[in-house]
Amino acid sequence: MAIELASQGAKIVLSARSSDKLEAVRAQCKRPDDHFCLPLDVTDDVARQAAYQALMDRYGQLDVLVLNAGVGQRSTVLETNQRVERRIMEVNYFGYTALTHLVLPNLVKLNQGQIVVIGSVMSFVATPRRSSYAASKHATQGYFESLRAELFRTNIKMTIICPGYIHTDISVGALNGAGQPFGEMDDQHRNAMPAATFAQKAVNSMCRNKSLVFIGGPERFGPLLSRLSPALVRFLLPRIITRD
Ligand SMILES: NC(=O)c1ccc[n+]([C@@H]2O[C@H](COP(=O)([O-])OP(=O)(O)OC[C@H]3O[C@@H](n4cnc5c(N)ncnc54)[C@H](OP(=O)(O)O)[C@@H]3O)[C@@H](O)[C@H]2O)c1
Image 1 (cartoon, rainbow, N blue to C red):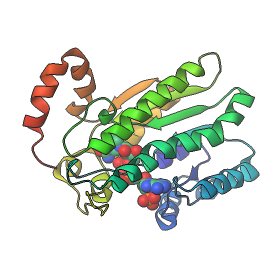
Image 2: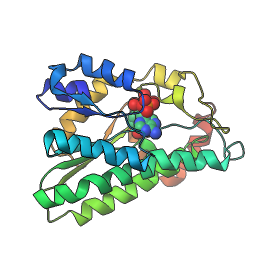
Image 3: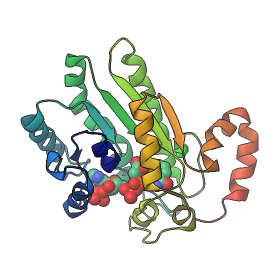
């Protein structure tokens, strides 16, 4: 998404924990010197505030907040340590809400800007071995729909983008029940939509101020199907999804 946004003229501030990977992405962006990296763990209060201050010192303003940091899960409830459950919520849910608390006051003051939330098909359905991940995404969906309603009379836009399977490292870094990375890319993600294709569609959606979009393969229809026929989805899911 950073590469795609940069190609359309945006100045990007890239954040995640791994500064080497951030710099590699920045180098692939059009006009790399226009962008900068602020390494950050979204669960770290001090780091979040320092990063936001550095951003404001440099630009004086943030127009678009893209909430994307996330960690997956590969374990049943019985296998999952409760510390792992909390860790997934800390990154996927509280990471998003904390960054929103930092950025929102200035957006409201200026009465402009956009919040882009990367949710998931799992914000609406829940498959086996994803209990905490699905919970974090369901919680995120509720939080940002509520915020969207609160911002109704402002010029602040909100776009919630829900990916299905996208070819990224999400399964590699997904936590097992003991909190260790799963360590491999599963078939669903290996054969999924390329990240660059996702990024084009996602950036297109945010530029058009779409409210809620689903991007991916046929699985992107899961949320709609679960609303139309929840019993059918409850029947099918555990039969279709038998492995990672
Ligand atoms: N790929 C899919 O099929 C899929 C489907 C639905 C939703 N999503 C969502 O898409 C988003 C991006 O995931 P992805 O697919 O691109 O997976 P990914 O390749 O594993 O990327 C996850 C990103 O989050 C960052 N991150 C993880 N923990 C962090 C932390 N504590 N602080 C700051 N950054 C952190 C990672 O960087 P560092 O490790 O360097 O911090 C990395 O940049 C996530 O919200 C995920 O839930 C993905």
